Image 1 (spheres, rainbow, N blue to C red):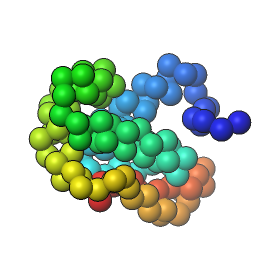
Image 2: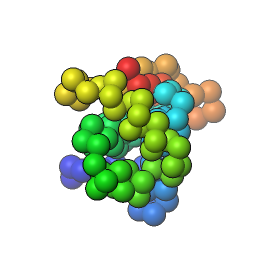
Image 3: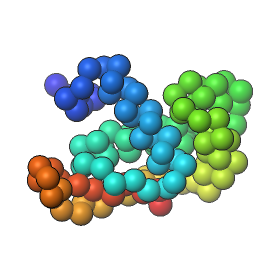
Length: 113
């Protein structure tokens, strides 16, 4: 079944987790997480960076509805989106860093390029 990964969570919990992770990634530029979470976060982050390229009131409201911090949305529109103005996608990089010590889950670093 194609589409979003469930990540072993209810839909509300999954949405809240993705909102937090996307916000944190845009705020800090880099996070360490599992590979499957990183792939979901990449999809959402690239969607909102592409949205921010069109600097309109509608797109800002859509970004504010998902991203949890207003100052991160401001940073997205003033710093991040202009940096990728002439790039058509591929704003993030996922680098695998090996298994986690506790449960051997495959870990990765996702960062803005």
